[in-house]
Image 1: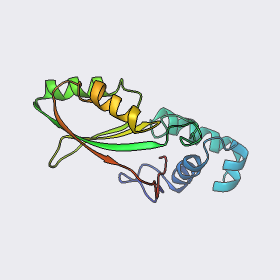
Image 2: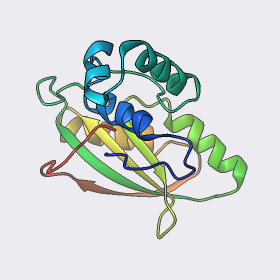
Image 3: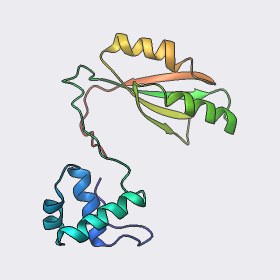
Image 4: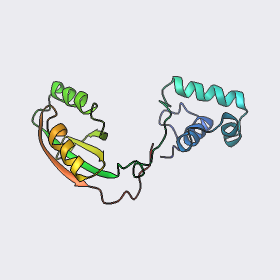
Length: 157
């Protein structure tokens, strides 16, 4: 994702440049970052610290090659719940966060309630996660699976 502006105008062009640079390379040295955005090291460090404190930067992580690690099977799962009260949604949300194979979970406005991105080593492992874990989540009424054949674009944000 490339940030071009901030909707509330609270971030200036230097802040936006910092966010874009760190999104591409979170391990970039402050001196390189400062040179890239056109500020000296001290104000760049201060801005990065402020962006962290204000919650614009929530962490730094390594992006792993799932294929090399033997986890290149990706399925997207549509989930329909039997109950969509706030209590039921909260129970589902809390339970799905505990499943390590679920990389993403989005509440959807549409024909189903949630869309999950599930990563496993193969279809057999996926079937086990679906049957024993996802289908057993609170208030799950039905699921529908879409298997990814190829990731044409898979950017980490």
